[in-house]
Length: 292
Image (tube, rainbow, N blue to C red; front, side, top):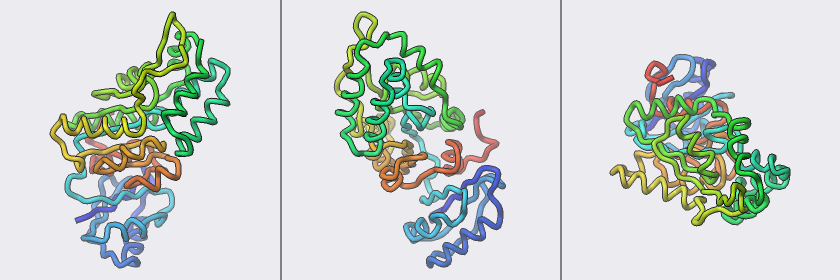
């Protein structure tokens, strides 16, 4: 049995669900009941097979709603692997840090290309960090305090999943000096991120090797799953950039969150209209069970 979960926080109507059911029937997929996870916000529509046909039929069927198609069994995942920049927080940390060095425009342009998959991530990271050579280490803490904000729903997502027994991993192509405080603020169990090389209180323009890039993120997910005795189907991953694609594809459910086009195309599903609490709805968590 499969489910299509429609999510539109506080604006989903019975008419929307009827429109989605009609779209399924038009694609030859017969709906089998509807189940409101949260009235007005999230609803499941069941069906027996033809998951790809259902996914295609529901794409854009309800304006302003996100749709996730998946098997009903095992929907509540036991491991979350999440990207940090522009996923768990609202900014790209390296771009903001570059502003303190007076090179934000140059760094941000490379970041955008790397996140779209137009550049090799590891090479692009080395090139960007090289532009930060000589920056006072104190700028890192200033940047974090002045620029970094949590993405709406991030803390509720992680705290709720942990309260229900899931393990939560923050895996970032960014830097530990940002990722570790962010992980603590949100409530992650573990962090995997890159280490800036600092000498005499200043950035050297280098990153400690090996770099946590696309394959590093994938391996962090799989290593955590193995350590916990979990199969890939029990895992959930979320990210927005090209370096997240291997991780998203390795997870039982990979979510592209407000992502670049290549990422959205590669992921199992995408979230565009809602905040990160959509990842709770798609796992079947009613709002009364959330940890706020």
